[in-house]
Length: 364
Length: 228
Image 1: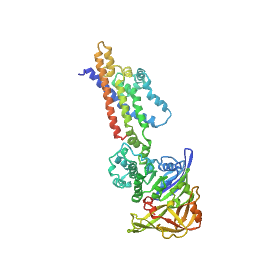
Image 2: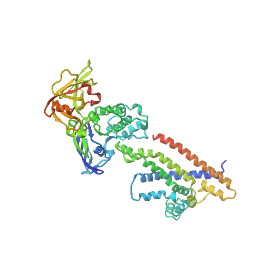
Image 3: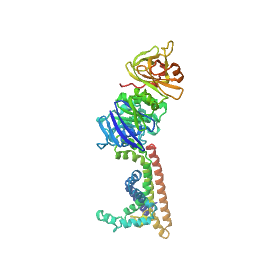
Image 4: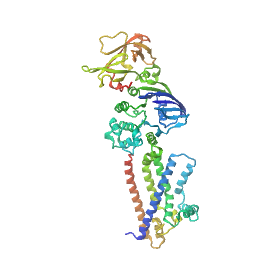
């Protein structure tokens, strides 16, 4: 899909990045100043690497050795900027059509009406960007980029300027892009919730370099990346399949590598794939299988790793057939003698996993 | 109501000003763009040259034009030999003098307006597949429109009032180069011409005010249209 191998200097600090991505959504994650935006700008041709190579779907966009450096308009990469950058002197319809007019008919990815429908823009077409909300503006920016028929969509923190309700208003639209148009996306963010919900692959950047890359569930489970992937919203990602619905109790049974998991009922067909995020603070540990307890989900497992922490709490990585994080107090850890190798039971409250933690349908 | 001489001066003034401003518009936009967007050796020199008419005595500038574009001047002789155009004693000469005098007033607002255009919008247009020329015509230029309008107005009003350079370069020929200010001056040279002079002065004021009001209105409409 995308092959990148480049070095560059941005001001005083060097940037070095080499990675390959599969189709789907690839998240670029890292603290601000890590070089995420610079990297995306180089993909788009807005900044120039000093050496290297960028290939998208077999098309060479940049190759310092062969002297190839395509202009931004020749790269056919859609770019959704953090600040939407809509053209103020055009209507919403004018903005949407701007790139579309420049694409030959046979190369169009999606037609105008389909984009208007997918992003729910019909009521906005005659309006001017100035009077629109942030969420509306970003939806238009996404539509505008799609209509230019990109091979790959770059999104640089598209939700960073929006408040939480607006964010959750847009996320389903972004999920819909991959599902309905099959377009691949490079998604820059420093918000782990967004990434877990959207992304298939994760590339972690820090100080102008790539620290780790791989499937989202694998990367978020790595203790050595904790400092970067975040402590407060720490959690594990489980890839699950919908097995059955219990309509009487309004619950859904999901299966994953560690067994079956009950959650509040989901509006998904049996067989659908779903990624869910279980936060470490919603997982408790017990040494013996608990009886007469309200928690529906109990999994036997083994402690793999115990984190180091300054505070009163400690994060424990448990293998229940799939990695799971539990955040417990240091006192409990001491009293239960939780050390690597210890057999434990992990408890997940069904109600602790809320709607917000469900990822999109997974393509894998 | 208007005497034939007054109509003549008035229409000549309008003709000279419209031609002067019309012909300077495209070079004006080009130079504003160079100054706003490009870095090149000699940029400070060009900037100074554009502003020169603001600080130079108009009569000196008129004389300079005479030296360059007079029948024996290097440019004047060339124009005469190749195109059979003579600028001296002709309304074209008056238009050239007015255009040169008004040029800095035309360029400056366009340049400021162009500098204020958000370059990130231009970048966004490129990622959507537009080449630089298309970006200029569809993004930069429309967003510069208020500055262009202001520049046009200032230059036009300046042309209406041009006197010194015109009389030096194109002389005071009735029906050819005798614009409103020159007619006013001529009226004052004649004993008992004060009444005529007053009327001409009032026309000048009326014309300038009308141009200002019209441009204010247009500027408001324009700003609404481009969503600023």
